[in-house]
Length: 294
Image 1: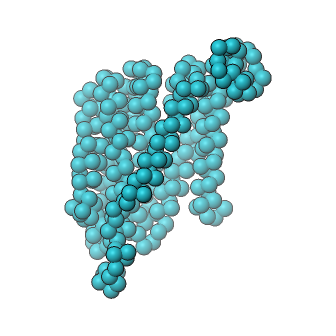
Image 2: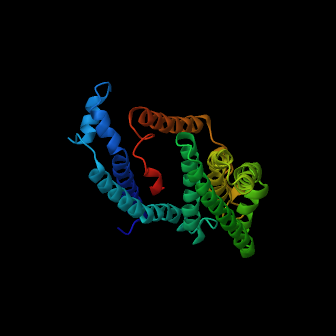
Image 3: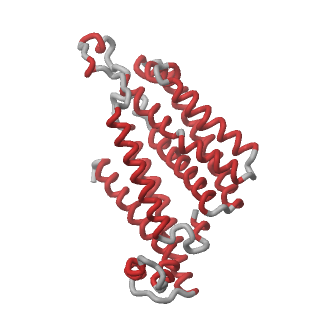
């Protein structure tokens, strides 16, 4: 129980269980209806998921609504603790000065809310086309985006104020190093400035809000790249890079082909599972009112 890994394991499984049960209650109405539809090719699966239920009326709807609301409320602290614990993994590493900060868990929490909220907003636009819901979510995403950029600015300000060589070197690598373009062009320009302008200037345009959220999600890999790589690439002892010289001892990092292929496979698998779920389960046209729990 004293290990962060223990809490990480506990929280990730708790989140998986909560969201699985919540999704089930959101789609239970359609599952029961599909279980009685003779034209459905997967009728046996729907009967199994219906758990023997053959009718779904207002009492069942109200009961499921209460359960969904309760699970939504429980998922908030569980989710915040999960991403805070994720950030704490980095924050406790004493020899990584950029990571070793009380600000790191907060950055992870805000980053999760921002990227996850942006993805949710984009998917809501694609599958629901509820303009009012999209614009409300767009305003929340704008506040989260501004907060995240502000926290990043604090990280740079505090880091440079310390004057520590390894901290300054890592921050310089982010801003003017080999991969400067991932920070200035991908993250700040395409992933922050352009979405912020869209969310401010066209806040009532659901399509513009969806595009802004898509840009945030598509460029968020640069945020993680700029957080992880620079602090690993800086030698913590001056002159260490000249003490042992070998290509395999270099801290310069470029993802190799195998790493790119594994990453593409993981993303593709996730998209495939999502597509199969949307195709064979009523997750898109499920129980009305589910958006209220967003």
